Image (cartoon, rainbow, N blue to C red):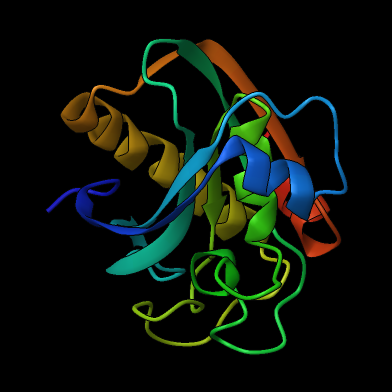
Amino acid sequence: AQSQTLISSTFLGTKTQAELYTQFNNLPFIQFGANYYRIEYTTPDVHGVLDTVTGLLAVPDNDARLYPRLVYQHGTSGSKLDVPSINVVTNGEGQLGQLFAGLGYVSLLPDYLGLGNTSRGFHPYVHAASEAWAAMDMLRAVDQFCAQYQVVTNDQLFVTGYSQGGHGAMALH
């Protein structure tokens, strides 16, 4: 097996442009609705052993366009399940992926090692290398998703994060 292999994608839901507009206080720049998925892919753990990890992928609902990619590294998680691919359906940080898709980005929100519902072991908190390679491998896995579902991206890549995710964003950069 190799790293960055897409294992599966699970459709989690959709939000229309109007729903996103209302959800985000009438933000005038929302141009699209969003379809969002939990992505499972492989990446090495801190010992170099492949692990299956998860992340949230949010895609604009108009497939007739060419979109830039955006990686959002999330803040510190209080529990293994307090991650974008799970809390997108509640009021968690995963909803930023929906917003970014509504703004026209193919948005990737990796859950990090040791977090989410599939990754084993403990999360290596503010471990720059694993934050970076989990995001890089998700980018590679999402390329496989995009080819499979005819989502077309351009060469632009935006990287951002909040709190621990700021650390992760700088590591990815």
